[in-house]
Image (cartoon, rainbow over all chains, first blue to last red; front, side):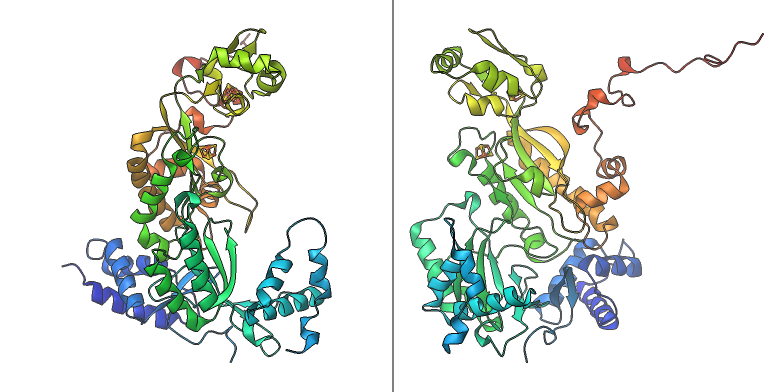
Length: 82
Length: 407
Ligand code: SF4
Ligand code: SF4
């Protein structure tokens, strides 16, 4: 049975938290990791796209830019003045 | 404001000379905008210290979008508090850059209310660039812009705001509807424009003819350049009129044809259309006498970029000719395959052209399901190793041929 978008989003969120400060994750990194985890038949690229949208629109994750665009947890901007 | 802060001897140098000066413009804005005044102060300090005093922000943006806002903070906010935040907003311009004066006034009002009041019309991406605002002003600005019918453009690893020449709106050379195509692609790929899905940026640029007024061959990951398949339309009486009016047809037209496929005997201009590479030179010189052919469409090219990580690259032909009414469907089919391949194999910050260079055009064509054709090779007739027609192939030497005969 196909994995729900909510489950994929949850797994993606855990991965973002796990890699925080170690590696910047792009949406393609998250997508590839979920397809590897659940299998292509259960988790499509489109499901992953919807899961990312859910994470961003709920405010649990945000996009960041450091040369390229990544997905991270909302935090106080390092470059912002106190 | 202490007078000392207003002194900008280094920037003042940039006001000298006959050309327009951005310093002059910022000084005019500084009469009413404290942000503009501090911007001048910080710029002066940067010129003095020979170093940028901007830090780039990583996560500023509007809710749900991963592009359109470029975060910027001052590293000397105590000296210049009004530019402690100085974020840029990219606004998706209308296709072909057509505005009414009323809408321009309204954008100005929004930006004077929420930002520095300073603009670039337009940035190299084609967007309207709103320069300088604080984090708290991003959402209110976005909200007012959307009420006015505008959306943010792209930044980061997204499909960047597509851009197009004015095409059929004003230009008789347009071989397809560039503005319509730009608008269609912008609306079709809203998700890719606002939610970074790629290894790096991806740009579409639409030019209506090979004059390529939006420089798509040099700047776009996917260049769509108008062209024609049949013969150049020719009005002999108009050619004769140009000659009578003093145009040197031989020197100014024929001698500059890159394939030397034109001849002029003093009365008649002849074009060997089979050898024409559609460069537009002759049409540009004799616009009343020559026109693109009637069978119009576009060439699709891939892989151009300005120098960032590696050197500059011009795009390569992917599809030599797509009829005008098939361009949109062809692009939709093509980009999904290109994006799949790039998403699978592209490294972080690797443009699609760099990926093709790294993995080879043959691998790329194979992956997206296109066959190689002669138009993909810049000088196919000069390459002794590639044969596009069976009859041109040199037969394999027979076994033993060329070996010294046994005595
Ligand atoms: S690219 Fe060609 S069609 Fe477009 S504006 Fe320039 S000359 Fe006209
Ligand atoms: S368009 Fe260019 S290549 Fe073709 S005939 Fe004119 S000058 Fe020659």
